[in-house]
Image 1 (tube, rainbow, N blue to C red):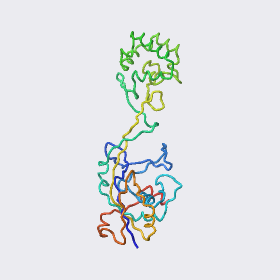
Image 2 (cartoon, rainbow, N blue to C red):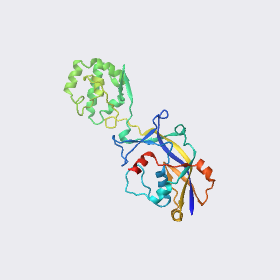
Image 3 (cartoon, rainbow, N blue to C red):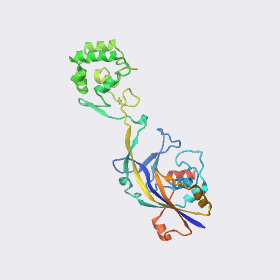
Image 4 (cartoon, rainbow, N blue to C red):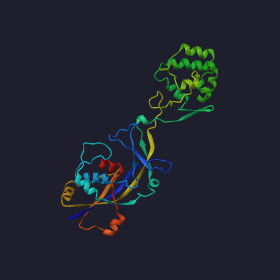
Length: 319
């Protein structure tokens, strides 16, 4: 006896990159069989025309029938059940809304958390007529001395105060103004002698004020700083804990699969698990129809699109 299983789902989210406008070449995700990002990873297209493929339906059915789903885009020791996969191949789908040419425009930006290695901000600071990568202020200057002796900070602040004739240079000048004014005195004997007697400030390795902030203040190197003083591996990192680089296109609809025999029905009665699909999509109802569809075959073939395998998974099937 032929059976038709109707599965309704709601708010299945397809994750897309957040761009200012629809990318001309489509959308890409990293392909990585181990789930770890490396610079050599290839990219796979996000199939907006076919966001739910045969493997996604197969994994949904695996969970419903009490089996572990097999990851689609990374290696795993889990083997899929071929009988369930063949049932998934019969699937047809009806999207209620969203799976069309306006999917990107109807998607929503969502806030995520950034991993530490990729969370440094990329600000720029303009000093005079030059813009430098990084963030330069008195607060960041003082942070350079966090792991050094307090005397090291007192000594160099005394130098700045003496050269510029201030009681407290950090209160008399904004940092960018101080840099411009002090750089006029970078070759004064008092400054040169101080740096020669105190190599700890501009030492190539471990110097408190080595590149790039040392260049800005003392100009004793011919190279303009190109590094970012706020990077995660620097002494004064500036981290962003949140990011908005992704969008969610939420899809709802109905999937119908066909199968013969009673074994699937018995497994459904035994397990009775409602799975998820894509990112957070909830299966809201499951109905079983024996021998006949709930609508005519004509309308079924017109309204319900045949589900195909996504391209990269098609290629892996053919290898």
